[in-house]
Image 1 (cartoon, rainbow, N blue to C red):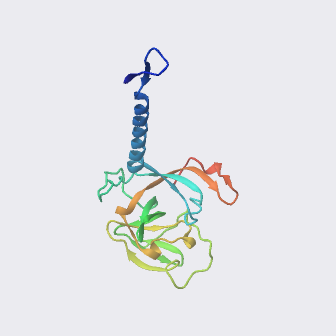
Image 2: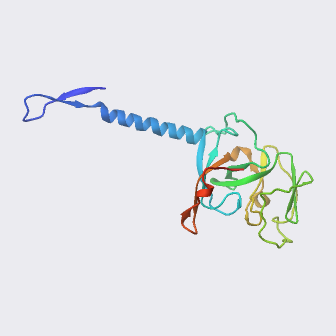
Image 3: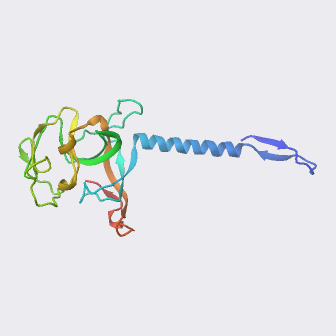
Length: 215
């Protein structure tokens, strides 16, 4: 720590002034900022649920952490990714860049991976010919649409390195049925835990939804 002497008029002796305090404060702030950026880039990132497409699993106003370790974080300004602990698999809830607008993040559940065949018949999803009876799936519109991919979608083979993503609230979700599969290079990370939840209608916190693992 550096110390300098400064003469103050009206005094008979120089006063010692600590010149290192400001510099140390700036350095500490810089280190803290660097640690925050490293964690945000390679480990965890906060995300807020903006819509009802993932109800009843996730609600608008839920705040969650995204685990970037799981699939391997992307190295900034490159297409390279760090090694991950696992590969995306059906059932995982994943945050990714929207294929039609990479500046916008989406969150959906993985239904199928590269090489799988997906089909929707009368609201029921079939993967590789097997009917999917998932407890998390919600249908709020009893009407089965005759046209459009929401309730009936022809067979689609997921390309290698891509994922077929759907919202749990199937009747109110814009997902791979409409805009296609998601390149795994667009993945941000795996949804991990809700750390806060705000009921936007009642203007109150949802304490029961805080610090819950997402699955």
